[in-house]
Length: 259
Image 1 (cartoon, one colour):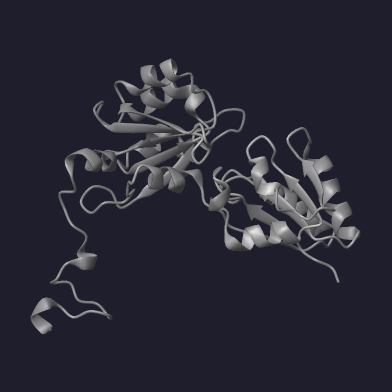
Image 2 (tube, rainbow, N blue to C red):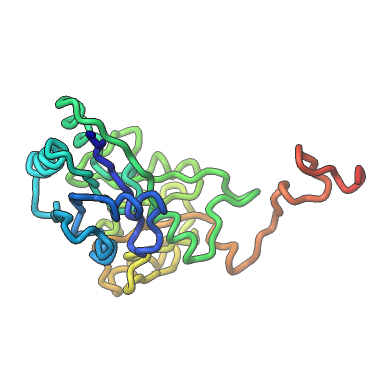
């Protein structure tokens, strides 16, 4: 029997935030290729005793592909373990293209992204009625370019909740571009290594956050979360959702007047 290669999202760092399906596949795998710089080793403790475990951190694309291909050809159950959710900055497309060119099937299991783990840790809803109904996930240009139409200053014009990945090392530039559209008192939260034992949150405003991040020493593995929704935890929600409003009827509930 030939098995597909499974690309599994490990979640943001907390070993319990992997999906049930992802954990099962890890426990059944004969070979695991994991992103060692970002995935905690504790996720591998329940792997089979005979499982071949490879850290992909020092490997290039071709070397990683060879490990996946060779495991498949040997009839092994192979898991490619990625951090967070593989569909976000996971570089899985290029890996799957190489596999598909050789006729090797693959499947993807989603994971919890750091954005949602951070929101959970903060007890924060990212979409609030009357404040923001849109969340934009993006990044600053670095060694990986960003299309000009997706420049941070352009996205900031929407005034929505922004979650910025892979950009904390350019914090001053992030603030500069956001300040073209967001007021300087807009709340900002920088979430460092969410789900890991050393997770840290740095909170401020566009005016103060760059200095706070500099003082904290955070230079990588952090999200920048921006928007007025972050005022709600301190000042309360000014507009309630219609979902639970007594006057709002839907297929499972009549209005109070109809009861």
